[in-house]
Length: 303
Image (cartoon, rainbow, N blue to C red; front, side, top):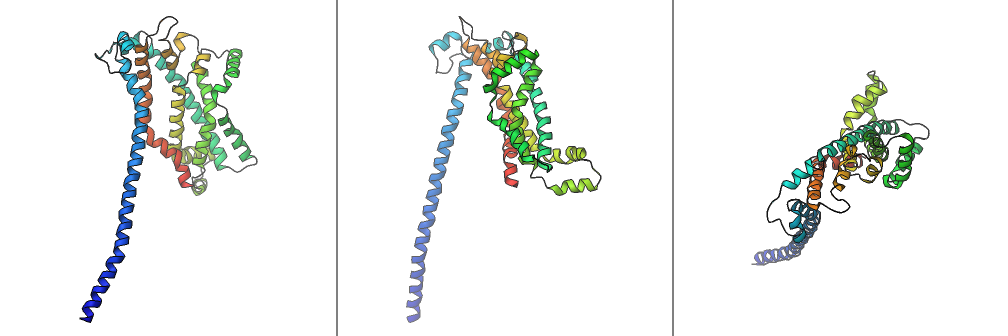
Protein backbone atom coordinates (compact mmCIF):
# COMPACT_ATOMS: atom_id res chain seq x y z
CA UNK A 1 0.00 0.00 0.00
CA UNK A 2 2.79 2.38 0.87
CA UNK A 3 4.54 1.68 -2.43
CA UNK A 4 1.32 2.22 -4.38
CA UNK A 5 0.63 5.52 -2.68
CA UNK A 6 4.19 6.73 -3.26
CA UNK A 7 3.96 5.75 -6.93
CA UNK A 8 0.70 7.68 -7.27
CA UNK A 9 2.25 10.75 -5.68
CA UNK A 10 5.21 10.63 -8.10
CA UNK A 11 2.83 10.34 -11.07
CA UNK A 12 0.84 13.34 -9.80
CA UNK A 13 4.02 15.41 -9.43
CA UNK A 14 5.12 14.52 -12.96
CA UNK A 15 1.72 15.50 -14.36
CA UNK A 16 1.90 18.87 -12.57
CA UNK A 17 5.33 19.46 -14.11
CA UNK A 18 4.05 18.62 -17.59
CA UNK A 19 1.12 21.05 -17.39
CA UNK A 20 3.25 24.27 -17.45
CA UNK A 21 5.41 22.83 -20.24
CA UNK A 22 2.37 21.98 -22.33
CA UNK A 23 0.93 25.46 -21.74
CA UNK A 24 4.18 27.06 -22.85
CA UNK A 25 4.20 24.90 -25.98
CA UNK A 26 0.62 25.86 -26.84
CA UNK A 27 1.44 29.54 -26.33
CA UNK A 28 4.45 29.27 -28.65
CA UNK A 29 2.28 27.59 -31.32
CA UNK A 30 -0.34 30.34 -31.05
CA UNK A 31 2.36 33.02 -31.20
CA UNK A 32 3.83 31.51 -34.38
CA UNK A 33 0.36 31.24 -35.86
CA UNK A 34 -0.40 34.93 -35.32
CA UNK A 35 3.06 35.88 -36.59
CA UNK A 36 2.40 34.00 -39.83
CA UNK A 37 -0.98 35.68 -40.18
CA UNK A 38 0.61 39.12 -39.70
CA UNK A 39 3.41 38.39 -42.20
CA UNK A 40 1.04 37.03 -44.84
CA UNK A 41 -1.32 39.95 -44.34
CA UNK A 42 1.50 42.44 -44.96
CA UNK A 43 2.71 40.51 -48.03
CA UNK A 44 -0.79 40.26 -49.48
CA UNK A 45 -1.41 43.96 -48.87
CA UNK A 46 1.89 44.88 -50.51
CA UNK A 47 1.13 42.62 -53.48
CA UNK A 48 -2.21 44.39 -53.96
CA UNK A 49 -0.48 47.79 -53.86
CA UNK A 50 2.05 46.68 -56.47
CA UNK A 51 -0.31 44.76 -58.79
CA UNK A 52 -3.30 47.10 -58.73
CA UNK A 53 -1.70 49.84 -60.90
CA UNK A 54 -0.55 47.20 -63.40
CA UNK A 55 -4.02 45.68 -63.57
CA UNK A 56 -5.58 49.13 -64.03
CA UNK A 57 -3.06 49.89 -66.79
CA UNK A 58 -3.88 46.61 -68.51
CA UNK A 59 -7.60 47.31 -68.21
CA UNK A 60 -7.20 50.81 -69.67
CA UNK A 61 -5.21 49.46 -72.62
CA UNK A 62 -8.13 47.19 -73.58
CA UNK A 63 -10.73 49.98 -73.71
CA UNK A 64 -11.70 52.46 -76.36
CA UNK A 65 -11.03 56.13 -75.81
CA UNK A 66 -14.76 56.80 -75.33
CA UNK A 67 -15.20 53.98 -72.82
CA UNK A 68 -12.20 55.13 -70.81
CA UNK A 69 -13.75 58.58 -70.46
CA UNK A 70 -16.88 57.16 -68.80
CA UNK A 71 -15.47 54.02 -67.20
CA UNK A 72 -12.10 54.84 -65.71
CA UNK A 73 -11.83 52.27 -62.92
CA UNK A 74 -14.06 49.43 -64.09
CA UNK A 75 -13.08 46.52 -66.33
CA UNK A 76 -13.57 46.88 -70.09
CA UNK A 77 -16.95 45.86 -71.47
CA UNK A 78 -15.45 44.77 -74.80
CA UNK A 79 -11.80 43.84 -75.19
CA UNK A 80 -10.17 46.18 -77.71
CA UNK A 81 -6.78 44.86 -78.88
CA UNK A 82 -6.48 47.45 -81.64
CA UNK A 83 -4.70 49.77 -79.18
CA UNK A 84 -1.67 47.46 -79.15
CA UNK A 85 -1.57 47.31 -82.95
CA UNK A 86 -1.79 51.11 -83.25
CA UNK A 87 0.79 51.62 -80.49
CA UNK A 88 3.23 49.29 -82.23
CA UNK A 89 2.76 50.50 -85.81
CA UNK A 90 1.48 54.08 -85.70
CA UNK A 91 3.88 55.24 -82.98
CA UNK A 92 7.00 53.30 -84.06
CA UNK A 93 7.24 51.37 -80.79
CA UNK A 94 9.37 48.73 -82.48
CA UNK A 95 11.94 51.32 -83.52
CA UNK A 96 11.95 52.91 -80.06
CA UNK A 97 12.44 49.51 -78.44
CA UNK A 98 15.42 48.81 -80.69
CA UNK A 99 16.94 52.17 -79.73
CA UNK A 100 16.50 51.34 -76.04
CA UNK A 101 18.15 47.98 -76.60
CA UNK A 102 21.16 49.65 -78.27
CA UNK A 103 21.64 52.25 -75.53
CA UNK A 104 21.16 49.68 -72.78
CA UNK A 105 23.54 47.19 -74.41
CA UNK A 106 26.29 49.83 -74.71
CA UNK A 107 25.82 50.76 -71.05
CA UNK A 108 25.95 47.10 -69.96
CA UNK A 109 29.11 46.31 -71.92
CA UNK A 110 31.00 49.39 -70.70
CA UNK A 111 29.79 48.97 -67.11
CA UNK A 112 30.77 45.30 -66.95
CA UNK A 113 34.21 45.87 -68.46
CA UNK A 114 35.06 48.83 -66.23
CA UNK A 115 33.50 47.42 -63.04
CA UNK A 116 35.19 44.02 -63.32
CA UNK A 117 38.67 45.39 -63.99
CA UNK A 118 38.44 48.11 -61.32
CA UNK A 119 37.01 45.69 -58.76
CA UNK A 120 39.74 43.15 -59.52
CA UNK A 121 42.50 45.71 -59.01
CA UNK A 122 41.00 47.10 -55.79
CA UNK A 123 40.10 43.75 -54.23
CA UNK A 124 43.07 41.53 -55.14
CA UNK A 125 46.07 43.91 -55.02
CA UNK A 126 47.49 45.77 -52.01
CA UNK A 127 49.06 49.08 -52.97
CA UNK A 128 49.31 52.58 -51.63
CA UNK A 129 46.09 54.60 -51.71
CA UNK A 130 44.06 51.47 -52.48
CA UNK A 131 41.25 52.43 -50.12
CA UNK A 132 41.46 56.07 -51.18
CA UNK A 133 40.80 55.09 -54.79
CA UNK A 134 38.01 52.76 -53.70
CA UNK A 135 36.20 55.47 -51.76
CA UNK A 136 36.82 57.94 -54.58
CA UNK A 137 35.12 55.58 -57.05
CA UNK A 138 32.12 54.73 -54.91
CA UNK A 139 31.67 58.40 -54.01
CA UNK A 140 30.01 58.62 -57.40
CA UNK A 141 27.05 56.78 -55.86
CA UNK A 142 26.17 60.03 -54.09
CA UNK A 143 25.72 61.84 -57.41
CA UNK A 144 22.46 60.81 -59.10
CA UNK A 145 22.41 61.11 -62.85
CA UNK A 146 19.50 63.56 -62.85
CA UNK A 147 21.41 66.05 -60.70
CA UNK A 148 24.00 66.44 -63.46
CA UNK A 149 21.70 66.93 -66.45
CA UNK A 150 22.83 70.50 -67.11
CA UNK A 151 26.59 69.69 -67.25
CA UNK A 152 25.78 66.59 -69.32
CA UNK A 153 23.74 68.65 -71.78
CA UNK A 154 26.46 71.30 -72.13
CA UNK A 155 29.16 68.64 -72.60
CA UNK A 156 27.03 66.83 -75.18
CA UNK A 157 26.56 70.04 -77.19
CA UNK A 158 30.27 70.89 -77.07
CA UNK A 159 31.35 67.39 -78.16
CA UNK A 160 28.59 66.85 -80.70
CA UNK A 161 27.18 63.85 -78.80
CA UNK A 162 23.51 64.67 -79.24
CA UNK A 163 21.22 62.24 -81.08
CA UNK A 164 23.78 59.48 -80.54
CA UNK A 165 22.62 56.28 -78.83
CA UNK A 166 26.17 55.13 -78.17
CA UNK A 167 26.99 58.40 -76.40
CA UNK A 168 23.83 57.98 -74.32
CA UNK A 169 24.97 54.48 -73.35
CA UNK A 170 28.35 55.86 -72.31
CA UNK A 171 26.66 58.41 -70.04
CA UNK A 172 24.53 55.68 -68.48
CA UNK A 173 27.62 53.55 -67.90
CA UNK A 174 29.50 56.40 -66.21
CA UNK A 175 26.80 56.66 -63.55
CA UNK A 176 26.38 52.88 -63.14
CA UNK A 177 30.07 52.09 -62.59
CA UNK A 178 30.29 53.29 -58.93
CA UNK A 179 27.43 51.11 -57.63
CA UNK A 180 28.69 48.22 -59.77
CA UNK A 181 32.18 48.49 -58.28
CA UNK A 182 30.68 48.65 -54.81
CA UNK A 183 28.79 45.38 -55.40
CA UNK A 184 31.49 43.53 -57.32
CA UNK A 185 34.46 44.52 -55.14
CA UNK A 186 32.76 43.17 -52.02
CA UNK A 187 32.09 39.99 -54.00
CA UNK A 188 35.63 39.51 -55.34
CA UNK A 189 37.32 40.21 -52.03
CA UNK A 190 35.76 37.04 -50.58
CA UNK A 191 37.44 34.77 -53.16
CA UNK A 192 40.27 32.83 -51.40
CA UNK A 193 43.73 34.07 -52.32
CA UNK A 194 44.99 30.47 -52.29
CA UNK A 195 43.35 30.00 -55.69
CA UNK A 196 45.47 32.80 -57.14
CA UNK A 197 48.61 31.43 -55.50
CA UNK A 198 47.99 28.01 -57.03
CA UNK A 199 47.46 29.62 -60.44
CA UNK A 200 50.70 31.62 -60.10
CA UNK A 201 52.60 28.44 -59.21
CA UNK A 202 51.18 26.85 -62.38
CA UNK A 203 52.58 29.77 -64.38
CA UNK A 204 49.48 31.91 -64.90
CA UNK A 205 49.89 35.63 -65.44
CA UNK A 206 47.62 38.16 -63.73
CA UNK A 207 45.56 38.52 -66.89
CA UNK A 208 44.99 34.75 -67.11
CA UNK A 209 44.12 34.65 -63.41
CA UNK A 210 41.58 37.39 -64.04
CA UNK A 211 39.96 35.67 -67.02
CA UNK A 212 40.16 32.04 -65.89
CA UNK A 213 39.86 32.26 -62.09
CA UNK A 214 38.30 35.51 -60.89
CA UNK A 215 35.67 36.07 -63.59
CA UNK A 216 34.18 32.54 -63.48
CA UNK A 217 33.91 32.71 -59.68
CA UNK A 218 32.32 36.19 -59.90
CA UNK A 219 29.65 35.36 -62.47
CA UNK A 220 26.80 35.83 -59.98
CA UNK A 221 28.04 39.30 -59.07
CA UNK A 222 28.58 40.21 -62.72
CA UNK A 223 25.09 39.01 -63.58
CA UNK A 224 23.69 41.13 -60.75
CA UNK A 225 25.28 44.37 -61.94
CA UNK A 226 24.23 43.52 -65.50
CA UNK A 227 20.58 43.15 -64.50
CA UNK A 228 20.56 46.30 -62.35
CA UNK A 229 22.20 48.29 -65.15
CA UNK A 230 19.69 47.00 -67.70
CA UNK A 231 16.69 47.89 -65.54
CA UNK A 232 18.01 51.37 -64.73
CA UNK A 233 18.91 52.27 -68.34
CA UNK A 234 15.76 50.80 -69.87
CA UNK A 235 13.51 53.05 -67.76
CA UNK A 236 15.56 56.27 -67.86
CA UNK A 237 13.76 59.28 -69.37
CA UNK A 238 15.18 62.70 -68.48
CA UNK A 239 18.73 62.35 -69.84
CA UNK A 240 17.41 60.59 -72.93
CA UNK A 241 15.05 63.53 -73.59
CA UNK A 242 17.96 65.96 -73.39
CA UNK A 243 20.28 63.88 -75.55
CA UNK A 244 17.88 62.64 -78.23
CA UNK A 245 15.86 65.09 -80.29
CA UNK A 246 15.44 63.34 -83.62
CA UNK A 247 12.42 61.02 -83.88
CA UNK A 248 14.36 58.03 -85.25
CA UNK A 249 16.74 57.84 -82.28
CA UNK A 250 14.24 58.23 -79.44
CA UNK A 251 14.13 55.53 -76.79
CA UNK A 252 11.06 53.73 -75.51
CA UNK A 253 10.21 56.02 -72.55
CA UNK A 254 10.31 59.06 -74.86
CA UNK A 255 8.20 57.27 -77.44
CA UNK A 256 5.47 56.58 -74.89
CA UNK A 257 5.22 60.32 -74.21
CA UNK A 258 4.42 60.85 -77.89
CA UNK A 259 0.84 59.69 -77.29
CA UNK A 260 0.17 62.98 -75.49
CA UNK A 261 0.09 65.93 -77.89
CA UNK A 262 -0.70 69.60 -77.30
CA UNK A 263 -4.39 69.35 -78.12
CA UNK A 264 -5.08 65.61 -77.89
CA UNK A 265 -4.11 62.59 -75.85
CA UNK A 266 -4.48 58.92 -76.76
CA UNK A 267 -4.55 57.50 -73.25
CA UNK A 268 -5.65 54.02 -74.29
CA UNK A 269 -2.83 53.71 -76.81
CA UNK A 270 -0.43 55.15 -74.26
CA UNK A 271 -1.54 52.48 -71.79
CA UNK A 272 -0.90 49.82 -74.43
CA UNK A 273 2.52 51.34 -75.08
CA UNK A 274 3.33 51.30 -71.37
CA UNK A 275 2.34 47.64 -71.19
CA UNK A 276 4.63 46.89 -74.13
CA UNK A 277 7.47 48.78 -72.45
CA UNK A 278 6.87 47.14 -69.06
CA UNK A 279 6.56 43.50 -70.10
CA UNK A 280 10.30 43.02 -70.94
CA UNK A 281 11.24 44.43 -67.53
CA UNK A 282 8.82 42.17 -65.68
CA UNK A 283 9.88 39.03 -67.56
CA UNK A 284 13.57 39.89 -67.24
CA UNK A 285 13.38 40.47 -63.52
CA UNK A 286 11.05 37.53 -62.82
CA UNK A 287 13.41 35.07 -64.51
CA UNK A 288 16.57 36.38 -62.85
CA UNK A 289 15.43 37.69 -59.46
CA UNK A 290 17.15 34.81 -57.62
CA UNK A 291 20.45 35.73 -59.25
CA UNK A 292 20.03 39.35 -58.16
CA UNK A 293 19.42 38.41 -54.52
CA UNK A 294 22.26 35.88 -54.55
CA UNK A 295 24.70 38.34 -56.08
CA UNK A 296 23.74 41.10 -53.64
CA UNK A 297 24.05 38.92 -50.51
CA UNK A 298 26.69 36.30 -51.23
CA UNK A 299 29.55 38.63 -50.36
CA UNK A 300 28.07 39.38 -46.97
CA UNK A 301 27.35 35.68 -46.32
CA UNK A 302 30.88 34.60 -47.22
CA UNK A 303 32.40 37.42 -45.21
